[in-house]
Image 1 (tube, helix red, strand yellow):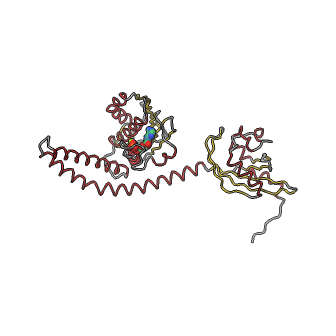
Image 2 (cartoon, helix red, strand yellow):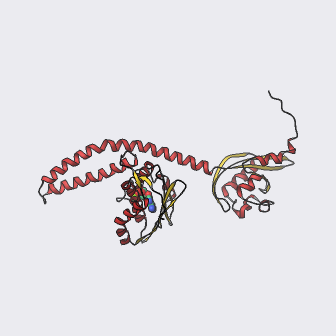
Image 3 (cartoon, protein in one colour):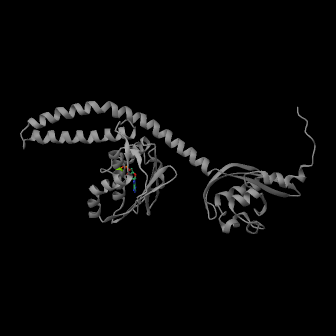
Length: 356
Ligand SMILES: Nc1ncnc2c1ncn2[C@@H]1O[C@H](COP(=O)(O)OP(=O)(O)O)[C@@H](O)[C@H]1O
Ligand SMILES: [Mg+2]
């Protein structure tokens, strides 16, 4: 066993607390702040003036008045206990939206004095990474399933279509059979479209990739859709600088991505609006942003947008637009994400690496 030298730790306690990277907060039994370490000042960008002699709920101009947290603190003071890993999300005016984890314990200071020592941990990045990895795993599993379905249905469907098409061509126009065969052919086309989108999502397509310009993808997509948007009172604003670097990709797949996103914006804008298409170069990729001022997306829907068949539209939606867009962008070694606020609008952000 190693022998520890006996020293008076009290001499160093302030220095020790200040070497700890996580913010530490000490409160008295009235929840008044009696100590914070230097990480606390750094993390929350507060000055001693803004902390000294303040109650916890007064910190940051009342920003720390979080009812659930106050209830927990009052409870442990009362019961002389502790709580572990209380997670809360809060928007702090100095540091923005953060997810914090708090652990707190009541210490007995003697003579009926009690203190709460609380340590805080900023788990924003960790939580986001974990959620992103869960999301990617989930989509990878659905991808495997979709790939199996698409592969299994593709050839029989082509077979049925070809037979029906042959019968259809032999049948004189105007007969009931002609009409029925037409309906069956349309149903096959519809199913084929589902299969195609599923294989785009599952990344099992083998289309050719070339050095292409994103400006060209955008212009060509707009040229065949702009008119129907203007007819619905939706106008485009474009900001695509000439210096946008080329990417390596498949033009028709990327047109499909853009079209799916634009159609979603169109369907989200009810009484006229605007779609802004912006592109810029970042360190090693082009970033494309498509922003609409439509109805936005409820928070609870955001984690499901890229799942095949997730739709909030009744008859009109297949729920394959964003799933196919996700598969295509991933196949281009890019990233796609959606930011949205209900009632304000939606922004789709696509990152595609420069062609070498
Ligand atoms: N720009 C947008 N504004 C509002 N909601 C959107 C937008 N883009 C996508 N969504 C939501 O995401 C869902 C999935 O979109 P998508 O995969 O294209 O399928 P679909 O359009 O067939 O429903 C939509 O049903 C809608 O709820
Ligand atoms: Mg859609």
